[in-house]
Length: 225
Length: 260
Image 1: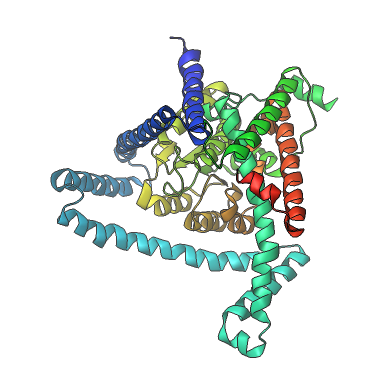
Image 2: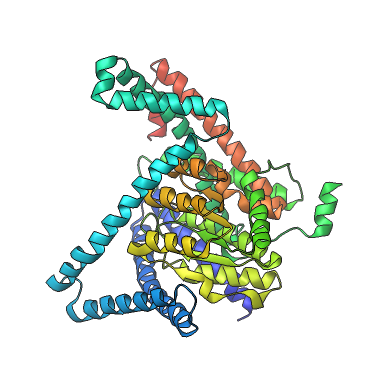
């Protein structure tokens, strides 16, 4: 098989087949389509599981390379990464993930660490709010400040004590201008999603294969004229 | 009934959408084209890569938390869009001589990302500059810590984050990138936009995310496909306005038709 066939034709054909079946399954009733669609989805999950092994190998090779050439500032992190990675793999293989010991490890290490990481975005959110007040355009600052104060006062008992009108105004802001703007964006986004999906299924869009045609200098000059 | 009940009108709309798209793609094949509005965020990618070259620092790309989306679910299309951008970024970094760091959250995307970057380096004529180690998989639970750690250690000059995000990676990752002085270009689903707008130099809003290949390649087929998308948008706007007017007047025939 030529390189063009394996790198372009086959992937496009596979995507067209899988996408076509899933689309047909959504609209049409015949049992064969739902069976085929469900089998394809299972295949997707299977490929995903296999990709975990590819990932494991990839991480191991990458980390090994960095450790062996003593990559400054990170080689020891990769030693730690590999050690933990394989401890988990071995524990999982010996005890299986449903075993009490594995569950104990999961609850006391992964969950705890993960919760700690989840606290970080809260801090980032405060900094993001601070940054939003540094926006250059004055009208934006006024609008942001006004909505911030309204939402703040409507949510706090103090606001309700000052003026009862804060809550209805907040509800109106959230339910009318915010919701309508969001719906507009969602509809546009959904149309874009359908467009890209169809382009991919029909093989028009191939950038996901790394094939990106960039105009040559001569073509760009021609456009300029 | 061959078509599932409740999806008949949806199917008709889908056929109309597809026919409009095919018609415009055919016009593009005949060489017809229209002027495509420039999307500043896409143009800024070139600026971001040039900045990285000047500063001698890398460009960082990521597609979001692996639990926020999967390549095989409905949100996978955001990842496909992200790959289109990666293709452009890799092409530019190869041509200009910048280092590209790819932090891949999705294991299923990992081999594809490697292939996209490798192909882009080959197409750019610099296969020797491709570094396999620079494409790292950041598994599920460690994604946030690993990406933040990488940005802090490597101090990229540009951070490009396009895909489907959770609250944590649409806030913490661009925020840390900003803190490290990165030039940020980000784009994601509607739910992530409010954070990305505040934390980025450029943001891809709504369907701009899916227009990258048309703007970059200036291929008449892709440009006309975008024009077809605008026609479909106009059809939707007409339907929405008609629906609003009819519902206000208490006529539910259009709503009933949509639910058929």
